[in-house]
Length: 102
Image (cartoon, rainbow, N blue to C red; front, side, top):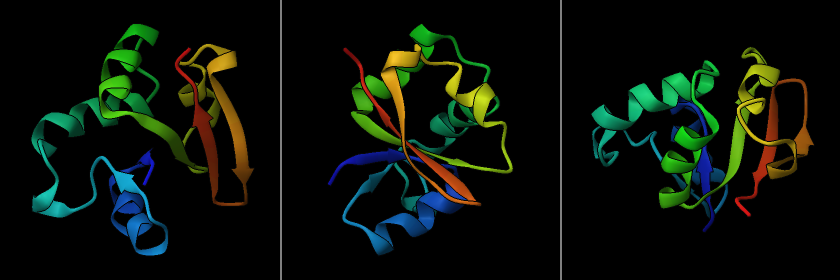
């Protein structure tokens, strides 16, 4: 399945409902959890540069991004060039984006 980046709690549930892969969310089974958590936290706070995002997401082949609405959606998506991120679903709780690298 495709790789999805989501906060830890959402990542824990997503694979139950869809045939996807997540970066974290498997508790102690998450590969490199201690290394990934600070990067993911910085990402969801809007603190990464475009090059840092590409260095992080491209090797993991992340194609989709889940953004909980209680976070600053603009701050998170503004880390991307506008043509590289497109919203594909939105409800009261979440927004789902497709990420493009080229």
